[in-house]
Length: 418
View (cartoon, rainbow, N blue to C red):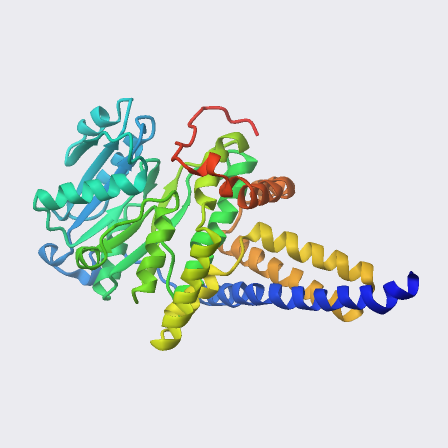
């Protein structure tokens, strides 16, 4: 039996380990390249000045329709509308439109108390969710004859920096047709869970798009703080209605040869749930992904069209699509290192250590870019539990029809316990 193990089983395991390390190394190499590009880009970056883009006249600045989808957001909506009123941008060049979608609270009444805010109320118990609300409001605005140059989409639980529209206008002046702002956390250090969410969003919503844009790839659309030219919406109407409507629309744009530019100075900060229990529904929505068949079809289309058109944007988007979430990378690299140590294979141990080092470079670059305050570091003690939770959501809950068949609003309870 021992001879059989030594002759057949152990070599087979070692071959499988080589293969697993090689496959795992590809996405880790990708995030390391993106991390390096993001680090270099952050050193070159200069903030957009507070004045008008290019110091042009007011009537030459683009006009914006600010779209705010809201479902029972009376508690937080006022804060967003106040931040929009404080934008350092000519008031006559932007308007705010709130769609109160299937609301049972005072969302619509609250929005009507603000000047320059137009409210549309939608009631549809069959077609529920943000994607349907956006499509309905865009149709209403078109019927009303709105001719804004660009549409800006902001979640109701957020606030924006005063320079938000100035930064977006600057991006439009450079020819961009789709732009994504920096979507980050408002209550960054409220609890360990908000600190960990801040770190993960920095990696996904800042480091990755910053690095991808630096190498002439495309940013993703995060669903909050993104901007689309009217001409782009006319070519590619909004038709995304899943729980991950932002990701679905982003992939459809890239597949059709479009590119989303990242605008780091257009900062939008969103309220995050302070407890793991409150994070549940939000994480399930965010981790909702295509079925395996749909994912394969998308990957095949990106590869085929990227090669046929010699389009780096599509090929880079393919690499992004195939990169597992951070929790998966951490779990897999840890398991590979343990297996290599058990086998006592020196080369494979060193390769596994290199993979772990690559993940640490990725995380470390994000921590450097976000300049995590010293008081927030104790929250890292909760990281293992957070990773296990994300793995459970990714592999179990996000694939269960029980949890993904309907949109569920994130709880806004005032509890601040972990």
